[in-house]
Image (cartoon, rainbow, N blue to C red; front, side):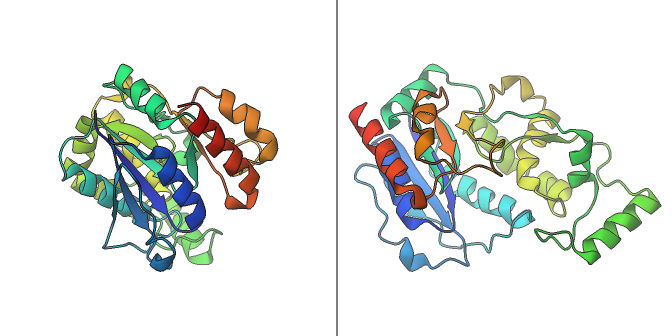
Length: 273
């Protein structure tokens, strides 16, 4: 079984090197998108001993909460999908790390083949407007223009794509070749529904899954994230035992600022092959 690891990164080159080292395997191909705003020279020396590593050349200026995040994911899906059929496409952040040795991860997916691992669920009411309203000026803090447009839409009773139920999930996940094919063949549908959405990367894969009637094939996320202690929380030295005891395959997020944890995790994974 061949696997494609699709990584979106914009900083922490040393951490990305560690991630690539830990997923390096003859059955892994690695595709990396570096944000257009980032200095590519910081990442050019990232290679693997057994995996093929490909950097996306036509880089996107990725903006938080913006449709550019979806376009970046699409570029990665297209790059991998065009090379042939992978058993799984794992969409990861450059600040993720595996929680199991790569051989164990690949074997687990072989034993649990044929399912999606996303964690899709109906969006709570407070999140539904992320698709049903139009966000033209997205910033991390609500700006006057966005507030004015959203207020006007509410007054006029405008609800875009009202016939489509909104589902949501993490934007990260592991997907079969079949589902990635669905994503790519529905690019026009995705653009229609999410071009002016807010944080649409957390909506489009799960909403499409539900729209196609495939949500029963979703077995939930295999990514460990702590949203209670942060947004999300960055793991530190004291979280080591918790991380290695987790039944998840991957975790986010990490930072080279906590290098002793990174080193400890790396040593653990290499010694438990």
